[in-house]
Image (cartoon, rainbow, N blue to C red; front, side):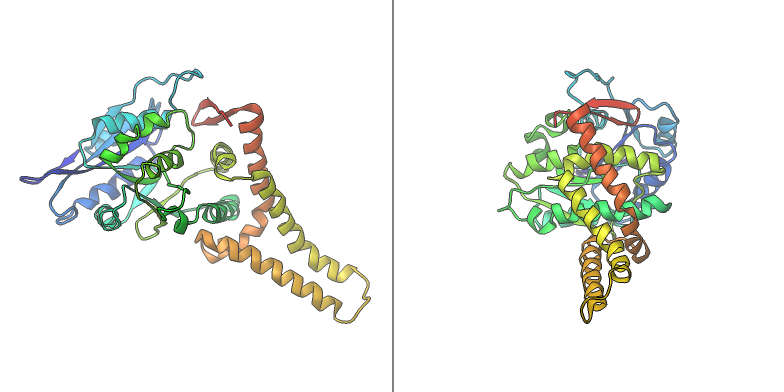
Length: 350
């Protein structure tokens, strides 16, 4: 689909890589198509491209029903010499066809708020950023998602500080592939998704390439722009974070150790306060103060994830599962050297 006006210039190409996303695409595309109200892009032309990544469901039919342009990703070579993951293959296919001065890569599990795209373009131009990426508001359901997702995103917020990512003087780079807006010339000058083809963490890898350009990148939490439901089941969440955590966290084993310590102190200190014989005045009060300090440090960290208060409180119970995901990700990347995503297995070089 192309939105056109007289004497307009193609301003933006929205590229959605989609593999078996028939259940998510209609709502995502509806939120994007609603962006075409008068004045959205100040009368400039834009397009939506859905790239079908060898789907076996009705992904193509869902995209065609919405009236958008549907492309077919080339067959994927899954051998060690193949050079592409499925998502990178699809993104690169879309980028080569796209006509926009800006390319927005966004996932099928995103829902875009009214005016999202126009505001993003203006923000990128205002900050002279060659790449702008948003971290969406995460929609979670079920006990384990509500308990674990705040932990994951709080650690991401700690490791990938927006202040440092946005600082041209810092080497730290980050992006979220759920919303990654990049200037066309900057994208192709660093080889785009082709240059990061084998990477299963393509968003961060692309951001690093852009920033080394050197160019300005901008990354922030943007609940006013879009939301996302990353995983529909616990099994999907396990597979997704197994694929990414060992790459995202600088020291995943040490991180697991510190979070286990948080868990033990949070639940162990109250028990000790009752079980340890009273040997000095105010002993119980000392245990209470230590517990308060533990709880404050833990929840102050988790609050960086911007989840709801109930989910933030619940997150302490997610620590064992979170540590399991960290260690499993390390095992897959460093020992098995294989990760699985959406029915495909990829070799890793970690």
